[in-house]
Length: 482
Ligand SMILES: C[S@@+](CC[C@H](N)C(=O)[O-])C[C@H]1O[C@@H](n2cnc3c(N)ncnc32)[C@H](O)[C@@H]1O
Picture (cartoon, rainbow, N blue to C red):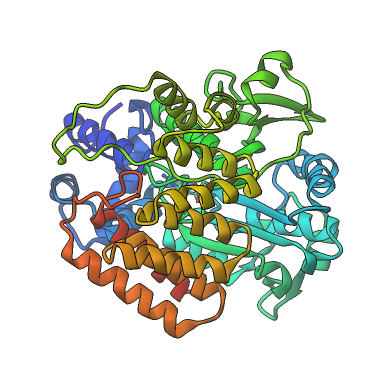
C-alpha cells in the first residue's frame, strides 16, 4: 500500500506511539496512523508533518503532546449499557455477592472504569449500583473513571449525551436517569453524576496500583475495548498491573472481543450467562477450580510495592534471607495470601514485619495490619515509613483523624517526605479542610521543585519527581473542569 510518508518514518512513529501511549499501529493500520498524525500536526500548528513527527519523537513528551496525540489517535466509541450481559452479570451476580459479604462489615466498594471515554460506561456502572443498593448513603461507593484524553474526560464530566449514546440501552435507563434538555440532549441526573470521579491516567505508565492516584484496592475493574488497541507486550503488562490493583476475589471485566486465556493467565475465568469475567483468586483456589464462579468475599486495600533498594547508597553486605526474598516475590506477584502463610508471625525482622503488614492490609485484614503496625512503631519510633504505612491503613479504615496524626509524625520525622504531605492533603480535602489541604499541596510542590526530574521519591515505588509533578498537574486540571 502506498503511503505519503516514508516507511521508516511511519515505523519510527508507530514504535514511539506504542511505547508512550501503548497504542498499536501495525503496518496494516499505517493509513489510519498517517491520517491521524496529519490532523494532530495541524492542531500543533505544523504545516510539515514530517517535521512535526521528528519534533515529538526527539523532545520530551509533555502532557499537552499526549493530550493532542491521544485525541487524534484513540478510538472513543462507546455507549450506555454496552454489552448488556456484562451489566446483567453485574446486577445479578457481582453486586449481590459484594453486598452480602460487606453489609455486616465495612460497607465499602471500589470500582474503576479504565479507559472510560466519554463516561457512558462509568455512569452505567453507577446506575447499576444505585438500582441494587437502596440505602446508598450507608455505603461508601467509589467509582473512579480514567482516560488518557483530557478532552474526552471533559465531555464525560459535562454528562450531556445525544440519542446515539443510548443506542444499546434499555428504555428505562434514559427515562429514569436523564433529564431531557431543550437541545435534544440528555443530561445525567446529579445523584448518578456525583458517584463518579474522573481522572487523567495513561495505562501505559507504571503508576498503578497506587494509593496516590486511588487505583488500589479495587473490587471491580472495567477495562473494555481499550487493551485491544495495545501491543501484545503492553496488553500483558497492563493486565498484570490491573491484577495487582484488584483486591483478592476482585473482578476484571473486559469486552467479549478481548477474552484470552493467554493474556489474562493470572486470573481465573468465571462463566456467567453470555459472558466470561476474570477473577483474582488465590493460587490454591485457582488450581482447584478452573472456570467456576468463586464467590468469596472481595477483600480490601492494596498498597504500593515495597520500594526498590536505593542504588545510590553504598551496599552494606547483608545476609540474604531466603524466606523474605520468596515472600517479597509473592507480594510483587499480588499473591498476598502466600505472604501471610509463609512469613513468621513472631520475631520478624523489621522488613518482614512491614511486608506482613502490607499483605494483611491487602487481604482486608485491617485489624491485624493495625495491630502489627502498633508493634512495629513501638519497636521503632523513628522510622517515618511506619507512620506513613500506619496512616494509609487508618485512612482506609476511615479513621481519618488518627491518620492525620500519624502523617504529621511522619513529616516530623522526615520533613521532606513528600508523599506524606500529599496523603495529608488528600485527607484534609476529604475532611473539607480546604485551607490545610492547600498548605499541604503547596508543600508538595515546594519539595518537588527542589528535586531533580529523575529523582525517585521516598516510599514511592519508583515514581520520579518529574512524573509526580505531571500527575498532580493533570489531576488538578481535570478537577478544574468539574
Ligand atoms: C473504545 S473506547 C472504550 C470506552 C469504554 N471502555 C467502552 O468499552 O465502551 C477506548 C478508550 O480508551 C482510551 N485509551 C486509549 N489508550 C489509552 C491509554 N494508554 N491509557 C488510558 N486510556 C486509553 C481512549 O482514549 C478511549 O477513550
